[in-house]
Image (cartoon, rainbow, N blue to C red; front, side, top):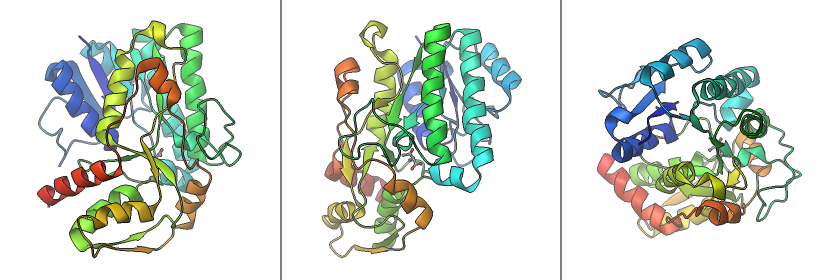
Length: 314
Ligand code: AKB
């Protein structure tokens, strides 16, 4: 039985991951933490600790007190936010990660942290991007993500910390909306379709990026953490994805429910610039081969689920 500490638990991934982990391993065996109180969150009213991941002493204290054996480190700023304040991004994304890895090393914790398609850059092959390839990102987020991948590998090789990680594409969910990401349009579009029947996309037509439904992302984390270590040739930075689409394809899928749905464009040059430096589609064959990665939600199935859930919510 695992005892898991989650950092950044109020974020888009953290919220649903905590709920799922509690279902699987028991409420008392999962400790969500974040820098804010869980107000208006599904995590409200259950055990929770305030933790600023740049505070190493506090991180160690909480982990020791909880007596955990696993850390899932999710606290990080997303791509567009990183471009607004690169120094803050470095402090939180890299400072937090070093603290989390040191805590895992000192307390002998199994460790997960996500990387992203943001770790790729303009010189990376754009289509069917292999897992091992050129990574020369030109954003602070990308620099953080590549550094993080290397650091996690280093902690495994040098200190034997059981680090594991994936490169997530854009994640689509209705429980908790993301904030400050380049792929956020693919979440907003569903909420706006249900609420107003129209959406102005900040990502331009014809811009393809990888995406995945949150349930598949959570399952991927659990499967990788449960995978037999002897089967893992790699540890970190597994490409995972289910689909690649542009805004028009999502609109088409939404029109199966709302034939009048109107998609217009109000392109944000910062996020469009980031998107243009990311792959159109990545190759997830190594994750499938090494630990059986399998995603179930295609675009239409995800659209049906999102619309149904948002209608209920509103
Ligand atoms: C972002 O857009 O910043 C994230 C990501 C793909 O890493 N969703």
